[in-house]
Image (tube, rainbow, N blue to C red; front, side, top):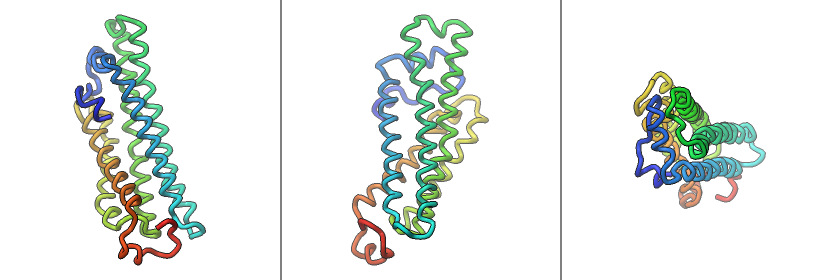
Amino acid sequence: MLVTIAPRFPWPDDNASPQAYLNYLLPHDTVEWQSIISIAILTSLLAHSVLISQLLPIGTHYTSLVKAAVITPMTVFVAVEVVSIGPYLATPLYARAHHGIGTSGTSGAVITIIWQTGTVLATMALPMLSMSVLALALSNRLHALLPPWLCGWPAVLAILANIAPVASVFAITGHWSPGSAGSFILPVGVAFTWIALAALTLIRGPSPAERRSLPPGVPGL
């Protein structure tokens, strides 16, 4: 995704001109590639949550509840993000088939509303990402799958960074309006970094010292 947006970053903010949206959306199949890559990333996130929940010890108290707390918010997050891609992708598809769209007041307003529908949906889903990180960090206190340091302040930062963007609904435009560079890319980047570190830690496996400190019954470690 970074490769596709880098030449045209940041994208237009909320309440920009309709032509600014079309100038961003139409050239080089930018939106089509972004949508495909985004869905691949979202699918990977959901798979990560499912797989990491399967590493929790079977038969322990609260295990089912913890698994649901990790998977359910991530499922909601992924579902809403996929839905938010719809308006984002539909605009260039329609605009390529109907030349001149956006030049009238009505069609321009429709483009703006469609864009902002997608950005608001994408931003409002971020607290679900926080809830999944929170559930995983708390479950680590019961079932130590991840290093304690990763579930400390780094987890708190990832959680708070993805709750704060809800306040972006009060920003009419600018880089902190819903779905813009500051209110979306920044918090998502923090959360994705945390998730990537968690995945790399699990792939690496615990050191001999960490292995000795783990409670019995942790599978595959």
